[in-house]
Length: 83
Image (cartoon, rainbow, N blue to C red; front, side, top):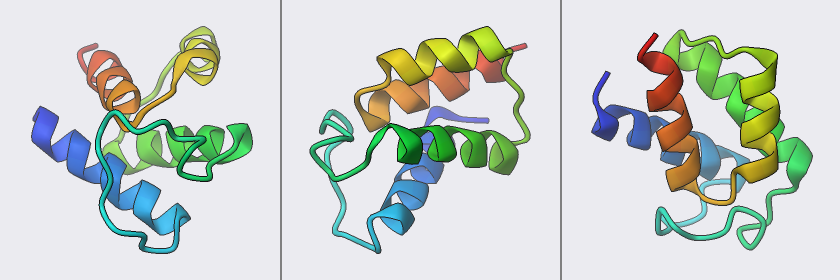
């Protein structure tokens, strides 16, 4: 799984939540885009399912506390995809 493929999946899923809003920068704050903590949690779970990934609960808790941008989500998904 390439970084570009993961990034594209993250962007597609966020745009769906935002009802197809124009593209956004990878470093734009997710909350500034209108996503709340519950949206971000759902986003993470759906992306894991879509990409066939599974994270430990502690890892998911960590990303929920620290994910601020699409770039953060992409990095997390790549990280858990390595093992």
